[in-house]
Length: 155
Image 1 (cartoon, rainbow, N blue to C red):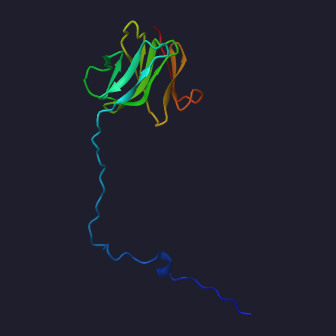
Image 2 (image 1 turned 180 degrees about the horizontal axis):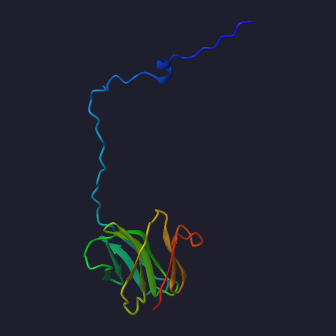
Image 3 (image 1 turned 30 degrees about the vertical axis):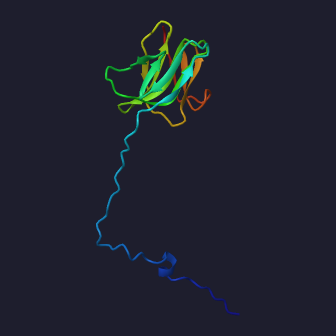
């Protein structure tokens, strides 16, 4: 008995060569495209008590109609996680990116017009959100029980 095995030639195994590209053509690198973003606007988020509203209009964060600035510069921000209110409606927090820096911003004392407390984050994933874990404790991550960062503060 005779057994035969067919082995394709290397040229056939690789497929046909693309004759439109020559080795003498210069290699063109594709550069990153910078897309100009329109200023970000998000729907207003009402506090649980209904007395306060946080919103993002034109790349700026407003709480009760008052613009909240976390830095001296007047640049716009990209809100990565929308504002989330504490259960009592007296504090709000969100994740933002401005000037290449990601941070979580907390306003603890909306009634008293307390200054924002910006906390720098080492890294932020696309699915990260802010969760309130106590009166002065927040968890940043995809879920409350899967934290990537935890922040606490005193009044």
